[in-house]
Image 1: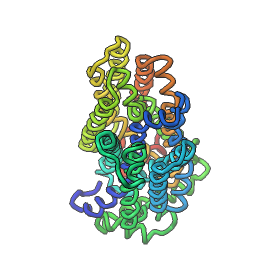
Image 2: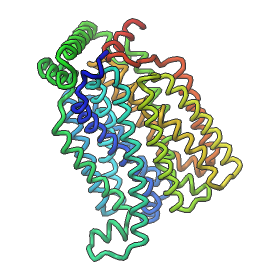
Image 3: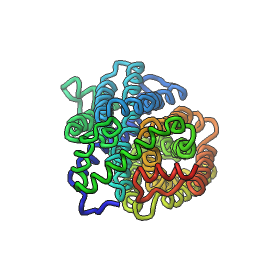
Image 4: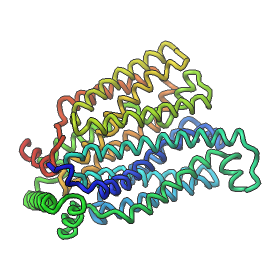
Length: 465
């Protein structure tokens, strides 16, 4: 375990902030659509099924992005693939802002989804591969914090642009008139151009992952990167551990496939935990929050305001995970948070069943967001970036993340139909049942990884076949 005083905190901060910008864009691009749904639905006369397709098109792009990210990350390196994700975010923001019709709007949403998918694998994995073991949980959790900040700022941005469009006079400049008044939903997408550009610039100042460099036999470069983070003695110890792990993996190639041998248990955990985090219903609230709140009697403007409240709670409670994850561990946070999520979802189902149409409905929804924010949200990313060996990490994290995005797509695509056909009460009850199984998984199947190096975690699976 490293001594905190020997860590180059400034350099580590630069690395973490840059990688978490991918999380910020992930969150922003995911949530910005919630403010555009009503306007786009009206402008293009979308059915409930097409509304689901408009929302879930980015999710299909995310699945494709995840599918290629592991392969690209293992061949090009983590840094180049992060740059690719930044460019995809920028192209999507510009394209959605100026899309001539619904077809091109969905095409550019798919491109944005590719960026989200790539970032969701590479960015937290990059942080995990550079972070000292005693603060790895905290640093990877900053990625989830960045997602929540991106979501929150998307809500603020949407609410501000909508208010500006309704209260301002017409602009004499055509593009401003189009983006911020006539079709203000375009301005909501355009706001994402700025963070995408910042991400592109900051990537130029960070190093490649030392574990990827070591995997490519570029040991001296790997040691140089580690020496910038740790002192020389610790860097040597770390690189020796990485090399021993890689050599061990090479001698066990036949056993070390993603679904066989020592990988069976971790891949099972990665796939299930990632999927269940989405089947809890989190992105039904992120994407369709205004629609849910309108069902409870809110007006659109009030619903967007309620969505901002949800975003604030999501961000604030992520700090609980940052503070606790390397002190209490991964399992306690999962159990406390998921247990609270189950109770909150059951309460929401009860309120909707009783046809309570007031701000009281916000209470269980906000409680669920709070519980998710310090457990399911951040800990899932930490666990799936920790539990796989270096040589398999890119592919295994990608497979787990594909599971997350497929579940995300299912929720995004079919939630409007569920809300319309069976109602909010049954829908929230289904989310509660999925979360109940996730509680069992965290209690019985997931090991504690607090304070262990990535190589020590790998050895744990080898010794517990």
